[in-house]
Image (cartoon, rainbow, N blue to C red; front, side, top):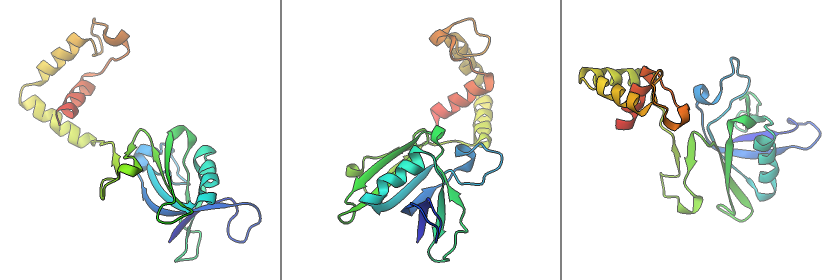
Length: 194
């Protein structure tokens, strides 16, 4: 059992709030651009706590961006580090009260740009949460090479030029706000057809 605690550590005085960690998805290269990481910034958390405890816990974790200590009941130690939901990351919270039994709340905390929750009342087993698909650079390069081998790159680039979305194009599509490099145009074409 893993517990997240904000406030005083074991034996300390003062007010603290806690929630049980039911699940987490970590994507450090997408969610954390810091060069040194003393805390974990998850893409998704699922938490459980009493109705009374959940709101102040989430207010501190998400609203104020306070880090939570991770406590493992099995090891009885504070050696798992800390979890934080940095305010600029745009975390979204969805909650369901009386989940499982009266007085219990389950909350999903997720980065809005990376995760999209299915409404809790519409959940189906195995399909509770979706994640934005992010393709790797190697995969993109391989697909762009396939596009080039098929002889389609010139047509894609000419179309993008006509739309005015490429760097150096004279057309002014969408007020000139979108100007893509050749590589970006080809990657977007590959993603759109995959």
